[in-house]
Image (cartoon, rainbow, N blue to C red; front, side, top):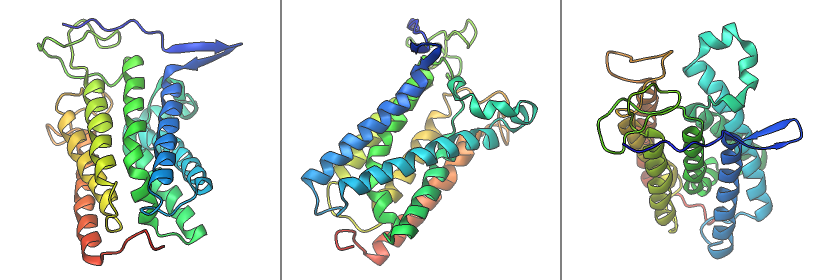
Length: 266
């Protein structure tokens, strides 16, 4: 059994203001994503003909989509009854409670608005951004780990951990599983794959499929949220939300390879 590291969820204080690691992880994720995409614009301007000013706009729209969509998605998908009883919970982000699927919807809406305002094909923007998304996902999972939340199901494996909020039984460190799959592996695959000029929508479709598969699999080791529990006897909310991602990812790949549109000539 591994010992859970004793990490204070508060990184530091600025006067009376407590800066939590959870929030810092999101900032670090955005910075890493911006840095990676800036490097790509400099080294491979032939693949995605965007400017650094446009990249800054994209990051801003993504940040708004992640924060609003992620928070509202968590409340809607996972904890609606608690929100009705405690409406101020929507502002208490330092306690955790962000939904990836809600954040994805929020980002898609924000980028769709941007694409319409500036007359840029939507999937050219998403194909450009998707390889960097796992950097933010990975940092978010580290934030979950530090917060001692979203831990896994009970286990007897040697690397099981006893989490401060998870009782006195060893559990799968499922946050770290997700960090490795949704963060490290997904970033590596998408970054290498997107280094070529693919048809419009291919990278986005691949992201949907791989994330959906990884998340669906990890949910077998992750403890279901207590307020939702198991659905249809053994499915979790995360698994049900991941299935449409896989389905739409396949549809998007078919559309991309059928249309054969590229983004280098926009």
